[in-house]
Image (tube, rainbow, N blue to C red; front, side):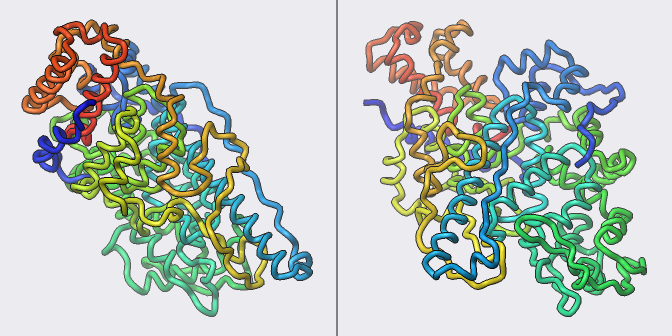
Length: 576
């Protein structure tokens, strides 16, 4: 029996919170024009860029980026690096007409409601797996990272929206505008059905204005606090009246729109949503707000005011193009400074995806979604309208240990049952994870209906993409994680072969090479020494001579996976 490697990880946990500073349809994106730069282009710079602009990298990918050269690699980064994947085929359920609903018995209506709810939930689960598959693939990692960024910037939650189709359409909206124009995206978001439901604009009428969307549009989506008044919010809410949705499609209800004169931020007129957005875009605070959020995301720190001001001007000069903004940032020597490189705490989604990429394994996307949810980042379910806090908030004693457990499951050295034994209440309610419980509107009408009891529990594959394995049929995090224990995809992992190809053999060489392959930062001397001693002890206990571990087919691979588990359980594994 192997020693439980989490014991050594616990000994190294003391330094975990001291390694990083505060955490931190448009035209197809083109590789932005760039001026010559003094930023370096070596292995450290290439890996840093792949960590921040993609989702981590293997040593082979770093070497390829260096060989390609800075300009050519940046061009590929903005246009995609791999073959396009098949698009997700969004299906729309067949809803009964009003006349058909009126003719139904109560039991028939209940069964119809359950069918619609189940199909919608399963489609969102299938789409979630498709999205994670895209993050792990090399199709267009920068675009997928920006989709994740916009998902946390323009937040909506399936729990409140209660319509998986609307959530999928919003995610597709982010993908269409991922590297395009922020201005176009801001115009689109005030017509997005999921956002209109999430921020109660479906209840925003001429007779009873609702201020939720107007407030967050200014506070979180464009200007930030302190750059508008309460009266501006009230007037903006009037401009947004009548903007609603039906069956995940935008609807403008002219009868409920207030067409009167309004004054927002000093501009007076018969304002509607588009004119309101134009007013926000004209404010000096707007490019500063967006630039600050982008810098914090990609650099992992709250940017100083002069840096925000500089990049606000970049964004404005680029006519709000995100690709041009990022092209300037990725050529900026300060982006590669010691204060930025290796100082960012990775979020759970990034943790899951990056580890799969570095280990070169491809579990089902739904499994990765379940792991990220366990670690505190449930896609399509942010905690509130501000999204996830990020940075140091990602790491607590509990989540640090669970990150190690999840890494162990990816490697096949930790079982879900062991995690349950450590914390039987860890997962909470079995079916609370990805269930956007649908309401009356899901039937396509306005008649009251009783919620369908029980979980959505089918294993159908409506939604076009037949996943390799879905997220446990919609039955929660633990069911999704159980698919990690299926051996099929983990057979792809061959640490012995990888290390043989690198020429490593001695204990210290094995530790150094695995550390290089699996971490974005260097091992601390203390961690390196502890890992070498651990490897020596495991090898000696099996009477394996120094330098001969890779010759042992079964024991060699098992010990190396335990070693990789230890490495991915370290404080260093939480940073990039």
